Length: 481
Image (cartoon, rainbow, N blue to C red):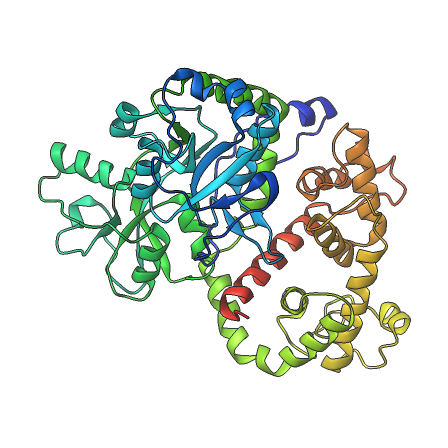
């Protein structure tokens, strides 16, 4: 988590550079349609039929209908969330750009980088937003927007398997990479200049996420993935291991057809405004900020306990969640964060049970035996639902759930203080991504002495929400409905 500067001035003007990005949930195979002005669907290559610079001017696009954006269905780009809504970091960035230039946008989903580049090159889209780095080949074939994120190419292998420490140890390693990617270009550069014996297999069909799973399943030795993609997938496949970086950090950019100079300039202008306003970091933060505190030991332990302890508790989580309008996997994730699903867990302060209720809270909720897992789970569900209901109507989902989790951890009073302080700093008190940056200030005298509920260890609820979100997402991968 980025440290919050101690002064209000520094808070408002702090650098907007996301140094580490991390994803990918279980890759969705859905190729669907996003409704209204943000539609996503299939398009035959070349169907747009555009020629000339004027066809790519925002004014012309406004008159003609919509901005066609080709992307990839993956957690680091564009996917459908558990509420059936289209989301994703690339999707949100594009929509911010489209709103800025007053354009409707339609997303076209393709399964591989090769298909995305082909769609763009043959006139099927105005813009490619799919986590693409700028290689020499792409620079010759396309125009590019400014960098909005930096990633590092990494050689990824499996623990207790073949793990080379450098390119000098790649002899005999079965290395497979996705076709027409920056990884393939980097490997060619290394082979042609310094490592003539370097060899690999190119798969024209597989995505990077699919190759990571093959590594995890021991079907291949290693692959190459961006640091963002590896970090997200690492939560679901904890035995994956970064062997070594293949290159220095490199920028991700949007690509455009060579004739799209007017649209490229519009992207550059938007990027400058978005960076200055801090919007790019805020748009990326919800997707990456909650995954960077995990490590191999934590993930592996969670998976073991999900197999050993969760089955006996799962029916109770389901019933309690349904009774109180919650998702059972979210409730189970809270239970794991609180007690690691131990019925007789107890903290040094006397908080007890699966959901770690205080004596006073248990009495208020009608829980007579905090060590009874059924009573504890139902009590915790009532308490979490109550926290969510007591939040103001101006907070919408999914932020409403994140605030409720923070309140479960640290109390509704401190949540209100954090929101009040955030608004006092001229920022959005209804956004969890924003308030989570301000929350640590509740531990600083210059701030908490003027707040109603005073001091609070502000980083604790931020990390709490991060961990619960991780556990919930892993449960979704392990227990697909």
